[in-house]
Length: 158
Image 1 (tube, rainbow, N blue to C red):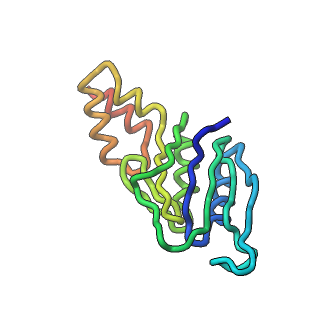
Image 2 (cartoon, one colour):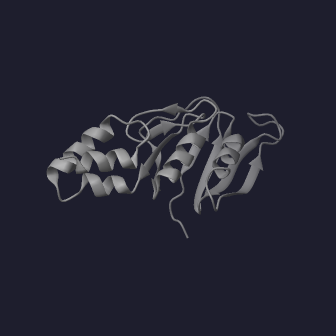
Image 3 (cartoon, rainbow, N blue to C red):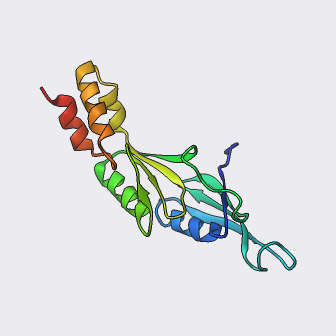
């Protein structure tokens, strides 16, 4: 059982966001949707809280109104084993108005920040060759979506 569950505050897109996220990550599903009733701050029938799982991780989303927005201070970190996985998550999460940032960071169309990071990054940045690690770091700092082959070439450059 998970003891900590991320809780995301949306204006009125919680259900749309949850459906978007579960369409991207395997082993994901909507668990429950509670809805606002009559006399509530949102129209009756509007999703209030959406409970869902992303690749087995429980997440809750609230339609709480426009008072709070996402910032880069909180992000979801997605480790990827292959470039194909990096590409798939990157392309899906930046679709429909998402924004690319640097070093594997992006914002999805709802403004939530994600880090799409190949596990190989740690191998190159923490490698036994300090000069190679420095070159890999400099290469990564120039990237938006992280390119594993670009990291490898920078690390192995002589």
